[in-house]
Amino acid sequence: MNDFTKDFAQALFNPDKINDLLRKELQQAVNNLLEAELTAFLGYDPYARNGWNTGNSRNGAYFRKVDTQFGPIEVQVPRDRNGQFHQHTLPDYKRHSDILESMIIKLYSKGVTTREIADLSEKMYGSHYSPAQVSNISKQMFPKVEAYHKRKLSDKFFCVYLDATYLPLRRETFEREAVYIAIGIKPNGHKEVIDYCIALSENIEVWTEMLQNMRFRGLMEIESDLLVFYNYPKQIRASIYSTSMIKSFNNVIKRKAKPKAEFPTEQSLDAFIGIQAMSYNDRYFNRIHKGFGQVQDTLESYFE
Image 1 (cartoon, helix red, strand yellow):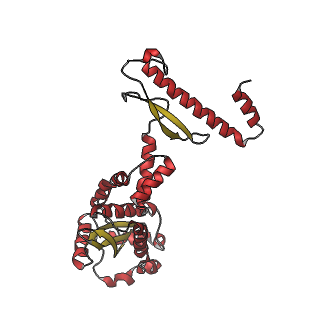
Image 2 (cartoon, rainbow, N blue to C red):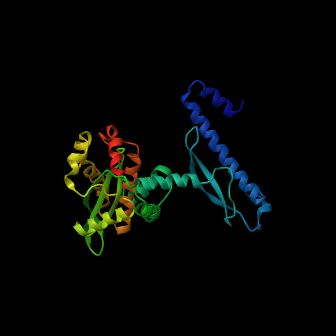
Image 3 (spheres, rainbow, N blue to C red):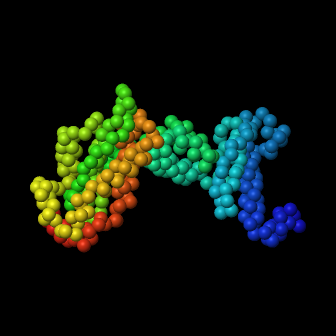
C-alpha cells in the first residue's frame, strides 16, 4: 500500500479531508506534468550533462492559481531562458483574464477607485494590475459609451423626465460640472435612460440641444401642451407625476461617484455615467412601471 492509498483510506473516515487530499494530489500531478513538458521541450532532464551548452536552459517558474472541482490549487509553471516554452497542461489564461477584466469594469462602475481595484485584484486573484492598467481596462467602455450616445432611439416614449446632477471633474481647476439626464417610459411601462450629457452648468440652451439631438435620433413628440397630463389615463397619473424615478437614478450616480473624489477627464466621467445608464437599462428592460400594464393599448394609440 503506497502513501496515497494510506492517506485516502484514512480520509474515508473523515469526509471533510477527502477534498483536501485530492486537491493536494492534483496540484502535485499538475506540477509534475508541467515539469515533464519542459523536459520534453528542452530534450534533457534537470542538471543533466547533455543539457550543457545547448543554447537554452531552465529559468525558474512563476506561480499561478487554478480553480478545480476540489478547490483552488497553486501550480508552478516553469520557464526557459529563451522564452520559447509554452505549456499545454493548463487552459489558456485568456478566459481568466476576461473574467478578471469584467470584474474590474464592474468595480469601476460601482465607484471603487483604480488603486483599490488594483489592490483587490492582487489579493483575490493573485494577479497584479497597477492603477494605470486598471484605468486602461476601464477604457474598454469608451467605444460602447460612444455607440450608446449615437444609437437610434425608440419613437415611443410616453413620457420623459429631465434632471441634472453635479459631479466633480478636473479640468484646469477642480470643478463640479452638470450631468444632464433624460429617462423615459415607453407605453408598455419599460423604463430607459435615453441619454445624458456633461456641461459646465445647467441652462436652457444645453437642454434644448440635448432634446433636439434626441428627436433627430428618433424620439417622437406626442403633445406640446403641458396641460395634457389630465387627459392621460388615471391609472398612471400618480406614477408619472412623481419625479422619484429620475431622482433615484441621480442619487445612485452621486453615491457611486463619491469614492472617486474627482474624475481626471470628461471622457472618464462620460464612461462612468455610461456604465450606470446601460446597467439601468438592462436591469429595467422587462419591468413594467406602475399602472402602465393596465393601459398599454390606450397609450400605444397616442403614437398611431
